[in-house]
Image (cartoon, rainbow, N blue to C red; front, top):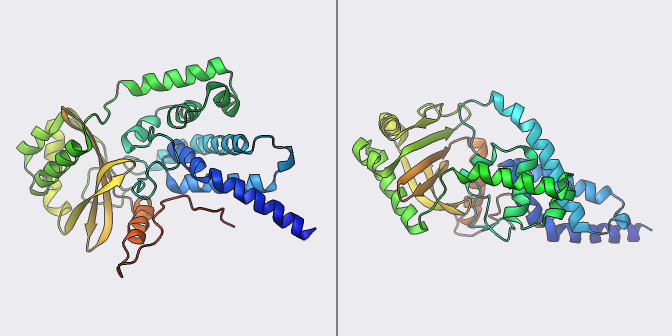
Length: 319
């Protein structure tokens, strides 16, 4: 009997392992947090492990439904928790050089700027948008998952698209965005206000997420070419002291790692178009960049060896 139970659990683990990256991809896009997404995936595993699997006709549908509904519950409680957050809140960045699409067929709803925009949606709108745009689920499938009619589900996705359509998106090539980033960093380091203004779109906005831990950054979002250039210039001498930068893959786009004495202290993501830089998103919260730090360390250990670099989902369920 014990052998049969173990075999059944092994089968359950095998099914779950095939879906794990996709489940993490859904949860991360919905929550903007690798840590919260991992918790949701683990709770999904617990429910899959303890459910009557003989009654489940479609295991993949069961797992997708479970992870989505759990993520919706977390979103509903997260909004009240973020009311006590100190300063701007930004999503937790992930190292997509290790897992380029986080298990998705497309990289939609992954970059930091879009994750910020998704924060404006209701939990059900966000779930429907992610399932449709990032994972190409059919409307009847999404309807069943979120507990709405197919018509209502189409409306959820339509409203989400309309919310997001008017906002700036990355529209330049990776090479162009990298050149803008490098030019920006050169100007920001020396506080060159005139050069910064030339690099910015008119309504550029800068946000620094540290939850109050970083002293020499603005604790509110700053908007406008003139204001942003002068705010960044005023912090230049202190903020950039001892910091080196290097290009990295952040949420599927080019970003910059900021390091001091070889230790990651921040991650910079941007949104850019032909008009220049639209958004500067500085992730300086030590807790939020810790998974990224571990991923970078695992990929390039001091002894020259390499190790696991996956930011969130491991290959098998945690016990």
